[in-house]
Length: 165
Image (cartoon, rainbow, N blue to C red):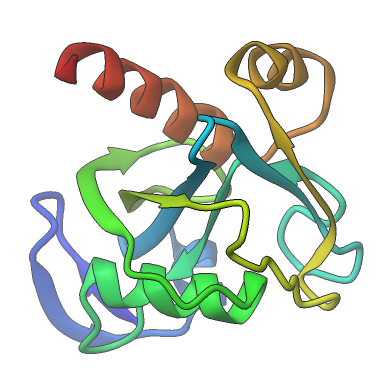
């Protein structure tokens, strides 16, 4: 992945994700909030064998932006890898996220999928998945263990939806 500066500009330095996290170097992460046509949120629990946040729940699907990738390309790739979904997410906003294991730029995307769209999770990445209404999601965020990115991305996503309406 590429290091970026505090304005999200690529510095032209290629680093590994673990090193970037360890050193606290800014990098890019693309995530997608998946909702269905009825407005329910796709939520999943991370597999226990993952090195970051094993067994925690997530509202977002995503990962690091690779060298030369856009946020949208990374989000699309991650949806295919983790959930078997071949869709093109829409970038809503980016922000400098100080939550999580290290600071990073987070590109938040959205995709609305129909009930007919198959979700085929990779068992190496996803241990469980389900759909929650917004009230159910708000309760789950208080009761279940979620990744830091999920909390911050959902808070900003719901605010974005409110201000857009």
